[in-house]
Amino acid sequence: MFPQYDVIVVGAGHAGCEAAAAAANLGSQTLLVTMNMQTIAQMSCNPAMGGIAKGQIVREIDAMGGYSGIVTDLSTIQFRMLNRSKGPAMWSPRAQNDRMLFHLKWREMLENTPNLDFYQDMVKGLLIKDGKCEGVVTGLGHEIKAKAVVLTNGTFLNGIVHIGEKNFGGGRMAERAATGITEQLVSLGFESDRLKTGTPPRIDGRSLDYSKMEEQKGDDEVVGFSYLETEKPKVQRSCWITYTNQAVHDVLKTGFDRSPMFAGRIDGTGPRYCPSIEDKINRFAERDRHQLFVEPEGWNTVEIYVNGFSTSLPEETQYEALRKIVGFEKVKMFRPGYAIEYDYFPPTQLRYTLETKGIKNLFFAGQINGTTGYEEAACQGLMAGINAHQKARNLEPVVLKRSEAYIGVLIDDLISKGTDEPYRMFTSRAEFRTLLRQDNADLRLTELSYRLGLASQERMDKVIIKRNGVDKIKLILKDFAVEPSEINEYFTAINSSPISERQKAQKILLRPNVELDEFADNLPKLKDALKSYSTETLEQASIQVKYDTYIQKEQELVQRMSQLEELEIPETFDYKKIVSLGNEAREKLSKIKPRTLGQASRISGINPSDVQILMVFMGR
Figure (cartoon, rainbow, N blue to C red):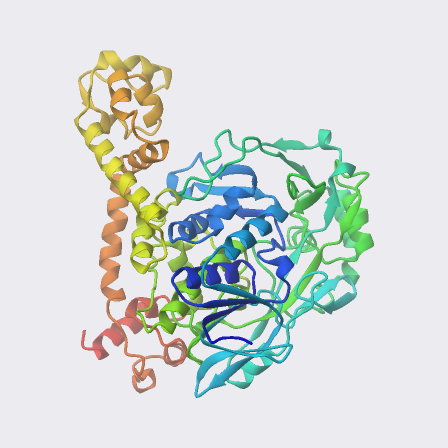
């Protein structure tokens, strides 16, 4: 019934979809197995993509030829570029999406991807022989062979849904859990643990009084995520802001004795940076209110997502508390919020390629690795799909460095440090964030992906045009001389010091309150010289000029640190023989088996003296 595949991807969430698309587009015969074809790429929680650091990840996925950026643009109902008041390293795109349209566009793109087959069934086990994964076993008893398997099980592995004192098996509300895989992997020597996440109640937007809330509109310009020309919305839907209050908190506290989290019925650790509302009012008792974002779920639905009100308290407690929120006095609830507890595998058991160390040809991506968030899952899926294809074809692995992408930071963090709580990406996790901006992901990554055969010729052509355009603009700014009489009136208007002698445009652009577009508007000759370049290219040139010193400093730091990254440690290296290393260092190095001295230096508990000892033993 089934042919032998190159790659099988288990699970069709954000990680699974990107993994299947990547492997298939690279030329592998790929099978995507999902428990429900109607929930492909479902936004299980917030109907939004991007945000702080997450937006950079989506742009990196797009630059590599992934689908997340395109699908996001095609389903956007509101777009905002966050942190515009800060430096460009902090700018982060975020989109509110139509939940149903997002799923439909993802499925449409996957169905139009060559080399990709689908099958609806639960995978209950793996075909393992001589330490290699050779396929999967489904709930209907089918054995499907493959050269590589990617597991992207999300929250479905032995998932348990909690609402107050009620709990039942499930990977999401109204969807059954997946069983069998954890037990098999543990029997093969894998370490597993439990994590917890949650989601807010969904409510009827017709029952809200928006006049009592603060409106939050989208940006005037919808920049979007994809570097390709995608269709952007001509109009946008507003979100709204309101707050909890003491009355809300008092109602919530009446349900604490039936809270699965406080009663100890949940063993898994929840996300530190996205706590439940009951956790927030418990941990931050000094605060008399917490901000809530009232977010529409699509163009043609009245369903509302209450961002900031994640909870697993009893339904009646949730409902009574909601009615105490300003604007929610007559609220109607579609479904209660809930917590979900699930199995994951500590990611120190993985290689940089996301292949498991214990079983060859088996890859993990997404929440199975302890991450939280669509974006974190999707980028892992992309890299696992690429490397599953490479492994199936006996090609070189593809690894992104910390200095190349947030994706590289995320994977290095996971496999070097592990995680005992849901891992979320922040800009602060990247030591080279001036280099890893959302505006230059295409310049950083598309050429690599194009050489692999994943990024299209269209993408590569656009990168070449952009790169050449940036270089030409920088030359124009370097050579263009500005007279005081031409520009001092503009400087006075923006409270900037006038100039007394001729200056080059490049030097003037270094002023913190001078922006290239406004600056050029006051210099007709300069504006004419720049008129043929796109807004995106002009912005990129401006950023490179303004932040040249900072960019150079980070590039120099990358060069210095690359010495450690290039010193590879043999996989058979025996750390236990180095008696000058402490017990903790020997234990952690033996467990994680770092690929390079650079990775070894980032393992928790490894100090600089340990790295120096390793260098001595490696003859360095």
